[in-house]
Image 1 (tube, helix red, strand yellow):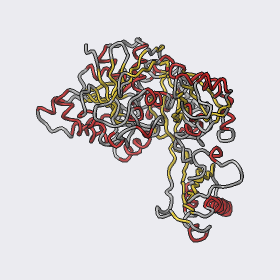
Image 2 (image 1 turned 60 degrees about the vertical axis):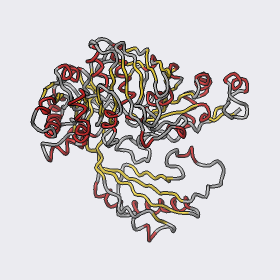
Image 3 (image 1 turned 90 degrees about the horizontal axis):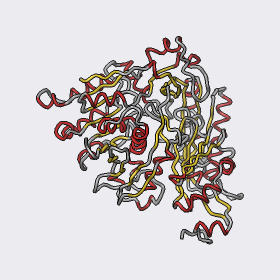
Length: 120
Length: 456
């Protein structure tokens, strides 16, 4: 079944030069394993394909039920160089949260996510 | 030794709330007030000011902030630590001294001034003695842009701030110290942590990372359950209540708005984060994958378990240089077919740029209201374009020739009469041409940077 990432996670993003970082945080600790399995570096790279110029790197923070993604070449040069509205990458967070996860019914059941997509 | 030391964050950046410093000292007991004024290219703005007037070059808002909390400093013993000194910490100290009239009160104010971070005058010597100050992202040597450098400051750590506190300073003014050192130094001083107390230094750094952006950890910019966060007009700025073992509680004063919770603190922890295992500072390398968070009651989050590793041999250097010019123009197109009209206007402008022979390194168009923040991710699936009430065309250019950018800026207004219909939102006038000051991050051997502490 399809689960909007927005249903199981929140996020905040920022910048480091021309790189946007997105910290993705599971809304409940029990949803972190599913998030970690499905929101892979490759999935995020596909999601942002064409919108960023560089590679995606992923780090795990299981202690915080969070993943940190670095999106290189995302900010048109970043900082004062960039002409973008979001020159500092502050809404790459919500851009990532537009992702939809393709999850088996069993996985969803184990994680306690309702079949109709509503929050339990 | 005190059991609990409270460091309050009162300013996340230059331009942050004018009231927060005073509200932090008046809202309850605190021991230290930490104020952060420096963004990456702030130093270059300050260098420009100093070059026009040698008595400037510091964050002038700091003077008003200190004035607003002076009774707390002189009568309650609250100590202020700030990087407001910019490229002229001594002038900043003089400006603070000037707001306290002579007399017994004046004698109670002891201002610690930390210098040594400013490398601008030393750059050629450093380059010639084997420090290329290569760009950390591109590898290019600084010599390739040497004549465009506007400022150069090493990020210094907590040691000179600790020394200033040890020597009795109740206001400590630095230049380019790391933001996190402003919080960690008071804790290191108060608890007597040694220079190799890696785990506790790392804990202080983490406390600094949490509170250095003001209310962004206490309910501001918090996506989780944002609608239910109360009273942001009176948001409480954060306080780290630290213990000698390095554990601490993040909280805020009673009666303030906002929220301190595991989600709000976690959002701030991942903000501007690279490799979480290697959060590098001049004093220590902190491992953010060791942080444990737990709720400690309403608006209280306990933070513990932090591990750190030895510091590196280098300091990061913040260099700013002139990188051309830019301008951004906007016009609003209204329903019907708002996006189509905005796109047509963009095509006209690009053709005008071509016809005029203007040369730019980058021309960037966005349609605010349709796709400016999320690009193609926001575009609707299928062929139907939503019937937007209005779309703002936003088009920017950047390049090395000021004249070309200025000429572009004059092409926006004519579109009001010459371009697609139902256009508005131009009353702001011609877009202004900005000097681009870009950031050049480099590393330098710690051995070549020496800080000084004076008490004035």
